[in-house]
Amino acid sequence: MASDGNDDSKRLRSSNQAHRPIYSPDSPGFDGASGLLFEQAMGQTRMAVCLTDPNQKDDPIVFCNEAFQQLTGYRSDEIVGRNCRFLQGPDTDQSQVAKIRDAIRAEEVVVVELLNYRKDGTTFWNTLHLGPIYDENGALKYFFGSQWDVTDIHQSRADERHAKAMAREVSHRLKNVFAVIGGIVNITGRSMNARDVARKINERVQALGRSYEPTLDEAVLGTIHVGQAIRAVLAPYDPENDRFVFTGNGIRTEPNAISAIGLTLHEMATNATKYGALSQAGGTIEVSWAHEKDKFARNSLVIQWIERGGPRVTEAPGMTGTGFDIARTLLGHSRGVLETEWEPEGLNARILIPITHG
Image 1 (spheres, one colour):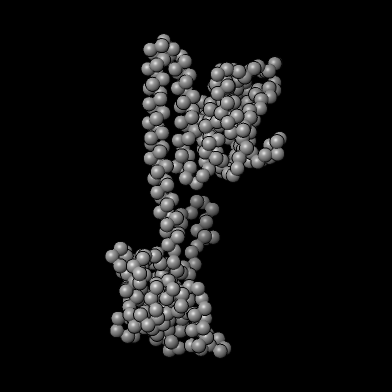
Image 2 (spheres, helix red, strand yellow; image 1 turned 60 degrees about the vertical axis):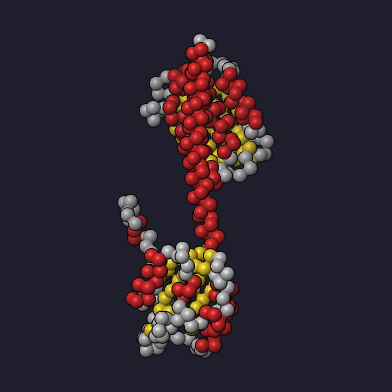
């Protein structure tokens, strides 16, 4: 691990426990140790266990426990005397098999993941831990193998990869949809001599696209990263990256809330550009987000918007217009609200959206 200046390499170091023998010829025994105790212990463990004898031709299995038989579907008399390769099949990764051969040759511990085959032909993913066992004189006696069925983990990984691939495809298509909508709006605006209206519509469409785009790949998790969406929506209003102050952690919320959040922030930023903190040099806006109980005792996502440094406010202007009407409508669909309070220094607003999880 590369150091980042804090010398983490001294604190974070692998023990290599999985890649060294647990027992060596110098290890002390214990009172009452016997083969009978070993067989009882191995018979009761839920982990599939076997021993092979490298001193016999082809290193055959000489012991397997009940868990090994249940995992593979073979009876003990069908297992003992055979090399472990009988569990391999056409789709077993031979590079992993080569690691096993190398470890046996060097009398080293190895941990690999293999696709193995049961007696009935079904497959399972097997995490195999293989290591040498020595007798009291230091001579190699057996190889110990423990197997763990990790098929569910592999399936989860495959499902996640598939979901992410689908999300990327949806993201690509969504970009195309927004581009098509923008083209239709522009053509319609020109044909109806309403270019200004078309421009305003396209600005809102683009704001929706920006709110989804940076986090759509993560939508497979059921929630979307709030901070990434907020920053993406507001980035065009801060080209020098010095007008917004963001405060928040890595909280997430439901994807269906992002459209309402994105469009509302777009309207507030547009208003600030024309009349508020972004209309004057030095004006800033602090945007923070958190999960908390709102005034209705609901578990909610709360986004705070505080403007400073704009024109001094002497009376509360009305936040009306098509854009805010659209934003409030979308918030309403999510049972959310927009609260506004005008202070002399500028607008102080809160977006509240109830959430189920995040």
